[in-house]
Length: 264
Image 1 (cartoon, rainbow, N blue to C red):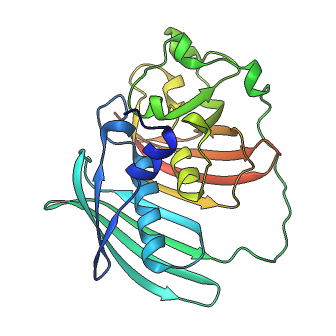
Image 2: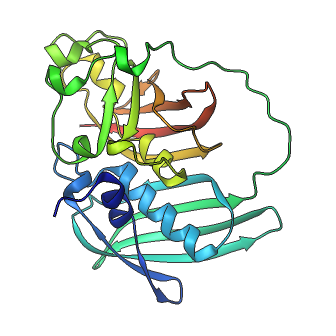
């Protein structure tokens, strides 16, 4: 039986409580990168969902994850711990283990979003509507794994796709979960780390792997596509930063992130 993307996302980010803050889960190959490893955003979404269920608090507000070892598909264990259950903000940690391997460590805060001032000082990327954009899979983008789970639309074909990197490590794209599955907060965290790293536009040898990633989750997006802006401005001693902004189709900033990557 073929599963819809909605089923796949729910199944693949689920974990089962064992007691004492420990949860069992399985990392699948359905979110693998072209390197054959589970995508870092997928790992973050799974850990964020499991920790949120353990804390029983509000919506996730911020999460910071360090990737400690290369993940493998298969059985894993999530070890969670509450740090503080405040009136407005609840904070905890989650550790991902595969056997004796400590794969990732995350700290996240959850809270109630009701009330408070909202003021937007930025603007979304200037993209054509998704229907008028290009499906990158028709222009050499890889398939399988993550690229079968997330839909992408781009304004123009990036230079590195055709062997001519532009030299400008900036990318914009529309993203959504395949089959139009509703984007919840863990999925927003996933989409902060689900597109090609813009540093590849600097040329050969400029691929990367995430070392640390922090996401700020502002609001649930309206139904539809999510506009994505990715930039790298600093490459130092083989490491680089990558900034991401996610905007919904109503022009609201829904999430943003910064990560430290290491060049491969």
